[in-house]
Length: 209
Image: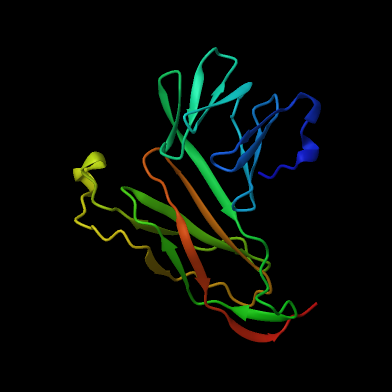
């Protein structure tokens, strides 16, 4: 789902500048939030974010909600917790429509490489979207760094390499002009930091009207 500032009732929004994390929050009364990460020059969109007020305490961001509770906002959480229940956080990222410098040519793509930061439970699903087709295989990229604090013997690993890891994926769109790369996840026990993404493209004939 997409949102723009024009869909917000800005007269009723709560705003806060989290200077430590270099993020500016704009939260509407219905719990939607637009966040501008000015260090990365990127926008984020959140739902179910019912902040009525904010406070930064020892470089950690907190907000007060209508239920009378104060919640901590942190990238260390893989889940949302309210009323004692853990809820998976649905995350979705979609690139712009990429023409790879030739919007007049068709292309084929046989594979791509995704770099992922090693973490205790790093996992992300990857797929694509083109002007030719909206259904392509969904591939998983994961790397579980050994960490006794989060050890899970059902999915045990001896991996200790903390350098970014590259994974090759075979997603094969054909005869497209524009390509969108998609990352998504919906779990309450994993996270992912993408360090790079490289798409192998082979140029074909001219695009047909």
